[in-house]
Amino acid sequence: MRMVLRATTIFLTAASGLALAACGGTASPTSNGAAASPSQAALIHTQSMKVGSSTMTVLKNAKGLTLYYFTPDTSSTVACTGACATNWPPLLSTGDTPTSSPSLPGQLTVMNGTNGKQVVYNGHPLYTYAKDGDSGDAYGQGIGGKWFVATPDLAAAAAANAGSGGYTPSY
Figure 1 (spheres, rainbow, N blue to C red):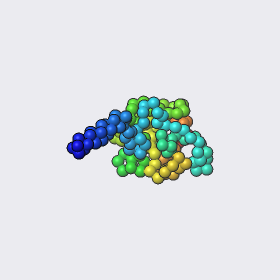
Figure 2 (spheres, helix red, strand yellow):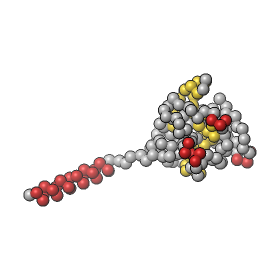
Figure 3 (cartoon, rainbow, N blue to C red):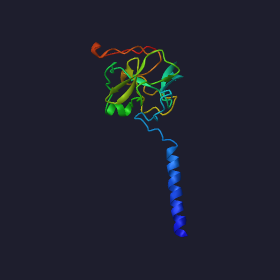
Figure 4 (cartoon, one colour):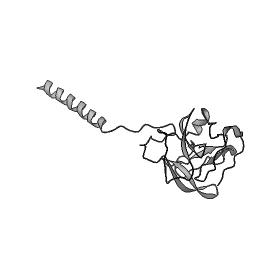
């Protein structure tokens, strides 16, 4: 009797584990700390917030963290890789067509590069900042004179052959 009871218990435990696993998997995290989301979920959102002494509408990732662009990047070259990408995690996409809510006036694309499938807005690869902890943070604004919050009206990035240098953000 004990043997039948033990076999039944093992069978039911295994069967219930398989049933739970069949209900669906969990999203795996991307390098920017955000969970990969279904293709219909918006990857980018906007939020009005105070940045320095100004209130502006900025781009946010799915977790609500502020998105930034790096002026040495071009529309075809990512300059922030390796150790840089540790402090400035790139916004990565699981698909080839990132979405936003609400719609953005500019072009949202994906660039396959050293960092993976990095989301690009108007030719600017997008990043979060490791020191931003919640949706009200924009600690990366202006760092080194090269990191700026991304806004919906961000002007198109320069092409790689146009040279690098002082791109001025359009706010």
